[in-house]
Length: 215
Ligand code: GAR
Image 1 (cartoon, rainbow, N blue to C red):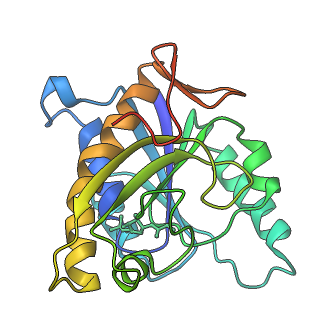
Image 2: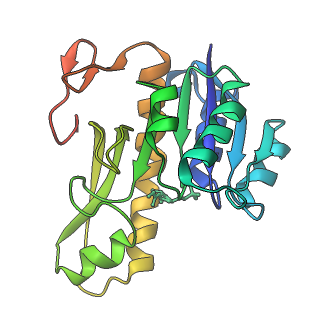
């Protein structure tokens, strides 16, 4: 079984969904061949920490305050993550930019979920930006993490429609439903050794995934 460490900053609903897919209760077909061995948050008030603890998962709070720069924080984070000897690191609403100190310590083993159809809308406030642009569709991307912010190779995307009366909250909710479908699926592929990050990009079952992902 693969060892998974999840980094969060808030609610942790994606973390919880993935943890549940690792546990026996889910159907065998959807089961992830892995264990969430730790959940680490950079904020003490991250609600996901308590939820993970309820599932019997080790939790840690690694505050980003009191560090001179991002690199120093990332080095502290590397040490905490490393202590769990993870095969895979999952960013699930972890709202910090990671430097090369972190990314290079776990090459090819970090994934993120980002609430937009990358390469559109990197960064924050993606739902509002899609509305402001008058887009008719929006979505979510799971991608490998590289040193370029929200720029690593896309693995899988899911699209949702935007309706005329939508608010950012409506859109966030619609996107969340898709997040709960695609993130566990991608993690399952990785844990079954079907998915890899290569120099060319993300490869599933030996086939290079296109710039916009598999779906
Ligand atoms: C998710 O919608 C995720 O896509 C987004 O944060 C939310 C976390 O929700 N991530 C980012 O915006 C990353 N830049 P959760 O804590 O309930 O899983």
